[in-house]
Amino acid sequence: MNKNEIRVPARFGPETRFEVRPAPPAPFRATQETEFERLKSRLLARQLAEAPTPELNPPLRRAANDAAALAWATLYPLLVFPVLFEEKTQVALRQAERQARIFESSRELLAV
Image: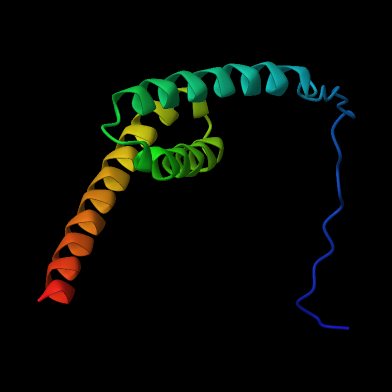
C-alpha cells in the first residue's frame, strides 16, 4: 500500500427522487404530419398551375419531395418547408431550362 494514500470518508446527502414524464406520443407528430402534407400539396399545386409546360411536372414533384425530406430533419418542418421548396423549385426550373437548351442545340447539330 502506498504511504501517500489518504482515505476520505464518503458523505451522501439525502436521497432525491424525481419523476420523468415522457414526451407526448405520436398524435402530435401525426397532426403535424397531416398539416405538413396539406402545406406541401397546396404549394405544389400552386407551382404546377404556374408551370408553363406539363414536362415540368416530374421535376417539380421531385423538388417538393426533396424539400419535404430535408424539412422533416429540422425541428420546425412547417416553417422550413416553404423556403426549401422555393429553392428546390428554382433549381429544378433552371435545370429543366438548361436541359431544353442542350436538347435544342444538339438537335440543331444533328440536323446539320
